[in-house]
Length: 373
Image (cartoon, rainbow, N blue to C red; front, side, top):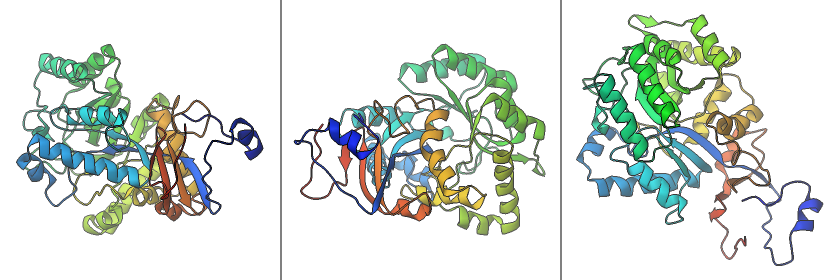
């Protein structure tokens, strides 16, 4: 935990001579970063689904552990894992928390709910009908997840699945997901590209919408009234901008991509709370590219200082963990990052990582140094 924070004289007065000092005179100390959308079970390769399906649980878990360490090395000290197989992310979360391996704090969604043959069916969460939906939510809750994930629409990496704009559940079914999650005291994140699915998720009362790209059958279908409801209810939107968002724009078509980016810019200007996330694990969304994803928010007009807030205190508040992380404050977890330079004036400084602490455990400590609790 952080014992003290503030002016040097005040902090030094609380530290005895036995406490080691680490000096970074050209650096900046800031809270650890929060990536609100990752898939540790996917490897970010050309066909991560095929790799997943061909991997045993032990092989998959070993890869997940390596990818968690990769995130930590870039200064990410909290991640929200939004879909895995067989409870592996919960196991990884617990082993990291116990200090058995390095990694960020993991908020695990477990197996995401999807329609039969629907988006990400390969994780094992296919459900049909209200009874099956309730049972799946209860099963995830019993496994110890931190939140429930539901695939409200189709998605891009599921070959043969429904198109991304198509809703997979009715509004009533989405309400059942949320009702059952609330009984277990869990928030709900809804994957929703299509406007119909976004509307169902909002009506059901989800806590966050992932992607929120406003797609319809024949193009974009943006609804200002729905965005106003999202903002008014404090529902967070995670665009899940890939570290390869520039390459995506080239492949998707610069004009169409910029139209999509404009929708996110418009939502931010309309008071919608945004969350930073990489969708790490899908093709080209690598696990060491969080800064590139943050630069997307720079592209839509946010300042470096606003983006730092977004990736620390803002994300912590949206994920309901602001009571113990996201700030340099006494009593908070020692989730800390030291970088060369000043990221408040240049986000690229976040790539020059000198030291990471996750819950006080050092990662990347200079040779010959140590920290004493």
